Length: 313
Image (tube, rainbow, N blue to C red; front, side, top):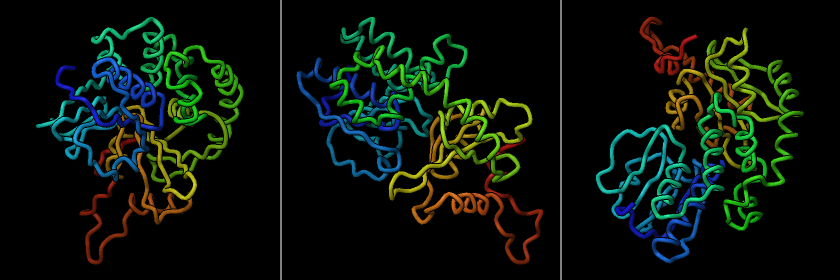
């Protein structure tokens, strides 16, 4: 923690509870260490990757470490895989802990721990890492759905930037009812509306329910031939975003080939903006997976993109 310089800004992931909780904890840490109210900014992954990094100092939470972040006076607190170690930046990393756990451990070193935060951070960790064997797994999924349902800044405003107010929040009752009622309906509908992209990669159409839980349950059901399942969504006029799930690490391999990233079994990617509709996206992925043979090139010399990432049935 001593290597973390005073930040001009704290930047965090906007898509999930881990990013929200981690960002709020880092703000609290900066307040304690420097007596300053450091502004918080949040980004979706695709916008973050295009952002100009003009600040002289920053704390970055829940985004993968990459060479463009390797700047003096920058600190990155994260748990995603990375390629090269930093030369200049301070990196706090553990692949076995979610980002908010790493942020909370820094807070605990500064005397900012509490029983309420202990509980909240534990639930965030179980939900973000999808720890199915934990007795709090289903409750953690309800917490995880709060940000996805009500959006980062709406929830931030509702709790007044105070993370403890998330614990046992009344909206969790809504999440529990939605899970019990919507997820079985959504699972049955999605199972009947799977589309093969390749023999090993399937598109899951969704109309209701927790998409991540639906994909996870489908992957564990007998008779489902795919080793990777993905959903797609498009917000407003933005690009189509893929969410990928697997059981044995194939999701991240595919996401990286599509210029995305994430965890081995839970990853994401963004398609080119020229792809505007879901049918176009499916065709785009099929064309990448099964490129047309070059003229006069023997078929046995071809290696498709998805064969290269060793996705096997």
